[in-house]
Length: 293
Image 1 (tube, rainbow, N blue to C red):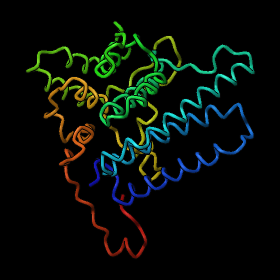
Image 2 (image 1 turned 30 degrees about the horizontal axis):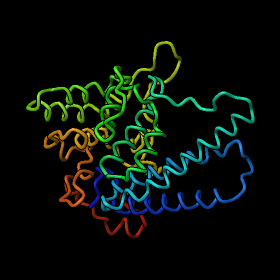
Image 3 (image 1 turned 90 degrees about the vertical axis):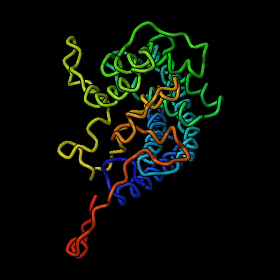
C-alpha cells in the first residue's frame, strides 16, 4: 500500500528501483580512484544522503517498516568517510575547516536533515553502535533544546541546550512536550498541521538571500518541481513521530494526516495511512502509451 499522498504505483516502483541503482553505482564508484580527490568528501556525503532518501522512498512506497533500518549502515559509513576525507582536504590546503555545518538560522537544511535521521534512528530502533555513531555525526550537543531533549530520551547523558534555534515550526512541538498530558494530543496535531507551511520562512534580514526552506520543500509541486522530475519522496514530519517515540505522546489526532508517518511507530500494522484508489488508465491512454502518476 502506497503511503504517500502523491504518486502512483508505477512512480514509486520506478523511484525505489532508481535509487537502489544510484546507491549501488555510487558505492561501486567509491571503490575506484577519484579523478578529483578534492570533490571526494562531497561525493561521499551525497552517497550518505542517497541512503537516507532511499529510506524515505521505501517508506512512501509502502515497504515493510522493519526493512528500512538496514540502510542506516551505508548512510553512516559514507558520512563518516566524507568527514575523514574532508579533514584531509582541509589539511592539504591549510584550511581550518572545509564545511560550515551547524544548526544556525541560515542552515535549516542541516537541522531538518539531522532531526530526521535522529527520528528515524529512534523509530526504527537502530543498534546502540549505530546510534552513537549517528550522534557523533550530528553533533550540536547543547545547542538546541528540542533536538537535545529528543536525543536524551535514548541517551540520558545528553547535555540539553537552552535555546530553540528554529522557532518556526518547532516552537509548536516544544509546546506540546511541555503541555499538560490532556493537551498534548491537540498541540501535537497543531504542530503537524502547520509543519510544512512554517518550514518556509523569510530569510534573515541581514542576508540578501531567498526564503529559507529545506532542499526538498518544492519537490512534488506541480508548478515548480512536478512528479515527472522524480525527486519527490514524500513530505513526512518525522520530527513529530520522533517526539511520540521519545515521550509517549498521544498521536491519535495525527493519524491519517498527509504529513504524519504514523507507520514508523507501528511496524506490524495496520497502516495509519488512508487507502488510496489508483486511477484507472483509459483505453486511449493505453494506446498512446501514457501512464498515470
